[in-house]
Length: 237
Length: 237
DNA sequence: CGCCCCATTGAAGGGTTTCAATTATCGTGG
DNA sequence: CCACGATAATTGAAACCCTTCAATGGGGCG
Image (tube, rainbow over all chains, first blue to last red; front, side, top):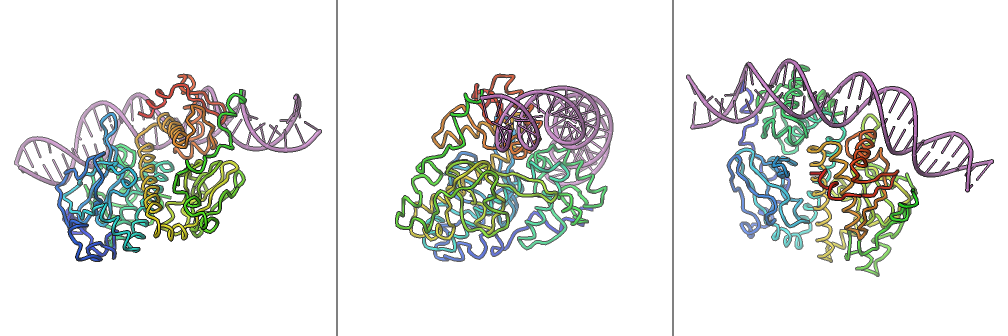
């Protein structure tokens, strides 16, 4: 069974540089001569490795090339609270410009390679390149918009609806990065999904089972096949 | 009874210009000669007046001078979903840079006066003033950070805790704007609070009653007096 | 192949919502 | 200034959804 899914979107999924959120404004492409000072390309981290600890000095953004990371804080009672999953093409750290510190821990969900983009050097680049400036504004603003949608998801929707929205958003995110497919390989565990959605593992599992009974999707471990995209969208209102 | 509270923080509460989120970088202060082209100061709106409708072209930010506004979308089933309250000194519209459209409706909660800051002109100002640029980056980044905290609030906390966090955050926001006081006049109704926190009116009301039984605060209509700030903070873990 | 972890499923309990009724507050006009 | 009506807020009881606790099943990795 698994062999049906595995080739469709494996852990080694990555975006070509021109499809990442930096897009055609990738700093190395713009400034070949500065390559290496602004951007350390393709640094690798192992599954469960911590890229960044909360409250350490903010020095650089992380742009996911392959794999995936989660951002989370540790609450007073030593629980994890995940507030973001980042997939290939995504940029991590935009929330840190104001605080100058990392507001979250960043941990690799699988083996992950990233481009590391130094904050200070990006800022100096902004001064001499209007396109880079506009891009960074756009990325920041888009991040806010995404969080607004997440807030909406939490405060308005029930468990089934939240999960439907979550899976659909994963579909859309892959699509935006040029991987339009009804077959999704989850980078994160059920526990991570539950935590992120403000639910328990059991509830997520039960909702997935309901979706399968309704023939909306099939879920087998980390492999999800969307069988009725419209029904999935409807569930999220 | 009401007369005890009313003078403490009335509807006419406003921040002096140097305490708003724009701070010492207020555009009119920086560029006296450009005043009027970049910023229309102190436009007034009546209670319940809609400043902006969702999906209209994004042209300007709104900086609250006095009063308050809420941002919200209307869901498919014609319900409101509030995702932000903006108090004097706050800036509205940062999420619109990427979409070039307003992502939310903006409505005045009370009679409200705002500074209207044109987007295009702010952008040209950014090119010639590094401080303005850094400020805008900071505001954007801070907005992301705030939404992260809101997401945390939703997914991790129960009704009592959410409400405690909400009231405490109002206290902190007034404090940051130079109005440090345990007496808070709510700009929004119970219905708005409930909607924002993902709860029902009844749950909010019951939680408030519990807080009063524990002598943590007193709530009378829109007037709240925090009687035990530490206990309130503890409730939010 | 076997172990361990992750995921699934079931049943009971708790918190929030829903529905309903009452009380309080605000704005308006006499 | 008080009275009135309309709106907002509070309180109660039942229903529902999600969580919690517990047990079973399955998949991945050494």
